[in-house]
Structures are given as structure tokens and as C-alpha cells.
Image (tube, rainbow, N blue to C red):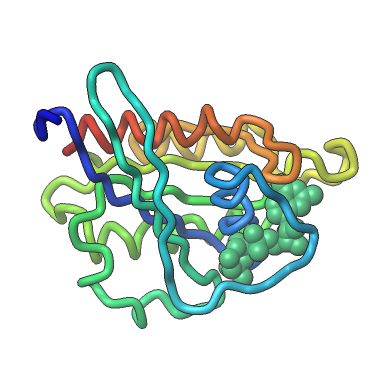
Length: 181
Ligand code: GTP
Ligand code: MG
């Protein structure tokens, strides 16, 4: 195969403990969901191949631990990233507020400090299925305002449990990563 039609893209998923980072990846790659909570330790990746126009794209999606201190992964880990997925839980205010820290730290470690606005971020507001949406505390409007204030970050509301919007969101990830490559 013509190698120019292939792309290996590195994606890093960040966000607070328990927001559903691992579940989103498992839903996207394996179409599986588990209610059981098994906290991620360290960092590991899964791969997913998809076709975008005439390109065969391999997404290398890195899952990280929400509880881990960011610094412990080190800047080498973030080097070469093509896209950063930020995840929060729409039912937990703190997971939304912490986005500032995740975003800032990623920019510090990986993005071009001269032009942080140029790095492709994307935001997922996860667990929109919980209690049929009645326990949500962060509105879509608030989330979109935050995205606008960070240089028009694309936003997707997702449910890893129901598979809602998961493919659409990761397709956007792949397209953004491919563009910036
Ligand atoms: P850490 O690895 O500790 O950082 O957590 P995480 O962000 O990987 O969260 P994880 O995917 O392990 O999910 C935490 C818990 O939330 C698990 O019990 C999941 O079953 C549940 N969960 C994840 N996504 C959803 C969702 O969209 N809806 C519902 N109802 N539960 C979810
Ligand atoms: Mg996890």
C-alpha cells in the first residue's frame, strides 16, 4: 500500500478520576461497557483503524489515570501527540472546573508554547445518560462557553454507557489529528 495514504496518529485522553475515559475508549474500540469501576493505573494505549477519505488512519489512543499527578507521566509522554481529548462528567462540577488544569498542563508539556491555541484539543462531556439527564450540573451552554474561551475547541456530549455520540466524537478527533499532522 502507498504509505502516503497511511497515518499513525497519537491521541491522549485526559480528565479527572472516574469521568469515563477508559469506558469511552472501550465503547469506541470494542463496543463494550462495564458498570464496574476499575481505576486506570499508569497509561496504556489501544489502537483503532479507520478510513478518512483516501487515508487509512491508525489512531493510537492513550488512556491515562485521572488520579495520577500529571507530572509523573513526563513531557516525553506527551511529545508527538496529534490531539488531546479532555473529558469531564456533566454530573460533577469539579470535573468541569479541573479542565482548566488539564488544559494548562497539556499546553505546558506538549503544545508549542508560542502558539498554544494551535494545538488540537477536543472536549467530551460524558455520562449524559445518568438519571435521564436530571442529575446533570454543567449545562451544555457552560461547556460551549469554556470551549469558546479556549480557542473554539469542538465539543461533544457523550454516553460511554449507551454508546451515544462516541463514534462521532472520535471521528472528529481523527480528523483534527490528521489535519494537524
Ligand atoms: P480513572 O481511570 O480512574 O481516571 O477513571 P476513568 O475516567 O477511566 O473512568 P471509567 O471509564 O473507569 O468509569 C468510571 C465509572 O463510571 C465506571 O463505573 C463506569 O461504568 C462509569 N461510566 C463511565 N462512563 C459512563 C457513562 O457514560 N454513563 C454511565 N452511567 N456511567 C459511566
Ligand atoms: Mg480509566
